[in-house]
Amino acid sequence: MEKRVIKKDALAGIIKKMAESTLVYAPVREEDNLLFKVLEKGMEPLLDFDNAKNAPKNFFFPQTEVMMRYMRTERGKELSTGEGEIQEAVLFGVRPCDARSFVLLDNLFNDPKYKDPYYIKRREKTTIVSLACVHPPYTTCFCTSVDGHPLSSEGADVCLIDLGDTYLAECVTPKGEDLLKKMGDLPKADQALEAKKQELSDAAEKEVNGAVPAHAIKAWLDENFENPFWDTIHKSCLACGTCTYLCPTCHCFDITDEVKKEDGRRIRSWDSCMSWLFTVETSGHNPRTSQKERWRQRAMHKFKYFVDNFDAIACVGCGRCVMYCPVNIDIRKIVTDISKL
Amino acid sequence: MQNPYIPIPVDLDKIITEVTTKDIKTFRFTFVNKEDEESFKYLPGQFGELSIFGKGESPIGIASSPTQPGYLEFTVQKAGVVTSELHSLEEGARMGVRGPLGNTWPIEYLKGKNIVIVGGGFAFTTLRSLINYMLHDENRSSFGKITVVYGAREPGLLIYKDELAAWEKRDDIDMNVTVDKGDATWKGREGFVPTVCKEVAPSSENAVAVICGPPVMIRFTLPVFFELGFSKDNIYTSLEMRMKCGIGKCGRCNVGSKYVCKDGPVFSLAELDKLTKEY
Image 1 (cartoon, rainbow over the protein chains, first blue to last red):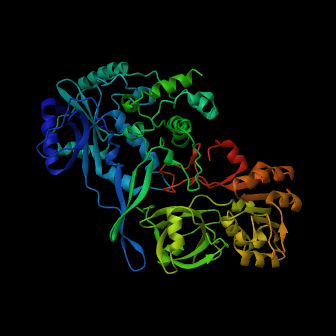
Image 2: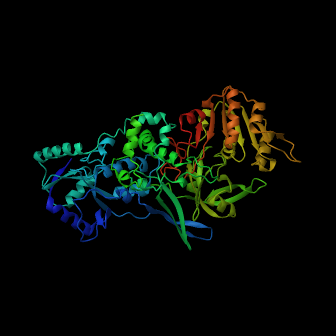
Image 3: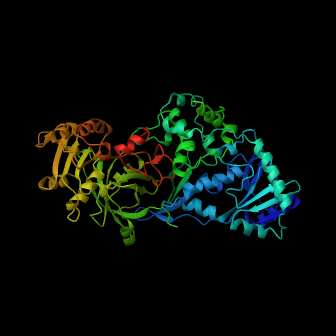
């Protein structure tokens, strides 16, 4: 793995310059929110931030996207264009938890039998630069409980680690190496920096809640689809869907059609298993009749079904669902409570 | 990279109204492009997403058999947005199909065995595909005795009437068509499907039962087959769930860890026993 050094005061300028010729997405402060947005020309990226409110999955799996367009013909409505062209982009400032979410989503969207061209093309055209969490930003962080690490480079093309007055830039992929070359003639990292990184890594790990027993509950989930425990978590749930929309790994979507005069488009939009409509059939039959079944689905999907199918927990421990749930439902508590049953 | 979400263009070649209530019709589609016809390789039990731009898509079992080349048939009840639009289309209309999707009836496993087909109402579509497949000259010798029990509420609701009559005339298939209640012109059998199954009493010896129908029919039919000695490994059925993508990505048709669209819709009872009861 190629390792280079970037001077701390130079990084913002390098990214700013990059944004002049390339599409760069980076965390941007907007009123009270920190969001991943397009870094407009002349803007400097934030380097000192906690994490964005929205997960960056949006850039590979947009909240809504046009899948195809069609138009009226003499025979009926016919396809006019398939998926559009995708621009090359750099996604800057991704936290390690969010970078890991892409590895998890790849399992689904890039599975051997059915490939999702919309996701895959965006993924191929985008270079991910992550910023390691030398100081994990929130008390709700629990990445180390779900196979992540605050200094992990998994899922990134380049991982930047703040060593005080310099950044250690670790190239994870050939795409990352190409990007670093474009950043100019950067000096190679020496052994001393490696040691410093290890020190920071150990310290950061201690700051994260690694005690959520996310793996330990699998055996219980395997056996307890029917259990009185499921009556205890959903009662305060408003079915607002915030947890699913903010989640970096939630991938459920709806497909709908929109028509305007002669032209129409088929679009896909994020959907949420928290909604009654998600599973209701034309006949009126709904396999998930109440919020209890929907919450069981959410917990089961993350900690059992995804594990069964892809051998990985569908949670990266970013803590967004914990922070933003309007009624304080806490996935860490649910997992912990299950582990005590 | 092939885009699995783009529908294959097809022309609506023929519409057959199957029932007196006129809300169940069979739609025959031909492929607009020859190469699509050649690459659409399917087996009985699979389904397709019928796609009408401007309305949406609906997952429907394929009712034709791959032994009938040149077209695809789907028998559809008018129910929601897409199926209502489909029922209002005329012959010659152009629309789309995505597929073939899902798994198939276990054809290789069925070979060399006696096959019992049980269908109720209009849940007979992929069973019809299977029957036509097995009865085809090239395939008939691969299967043992074929017994069919098919029922509907009343004579006017039986689908594929011409085919039922043609199969009745053959001596290599044991047809048992029944209605819950007959009318003045009905000369056939009366009685519910589970009762008829009990009367026909197909042997479980080297046999597999393939059962599709409304939940109430299945609930009363299964005990009959257990009594006859059929094991759960030798009873197959097909599940339905709300679907969108049809390829295991949109996340809504799972039963436990399995997606009905991708891992199903065909399951043996033994497989269903291992899944959660959330369908």
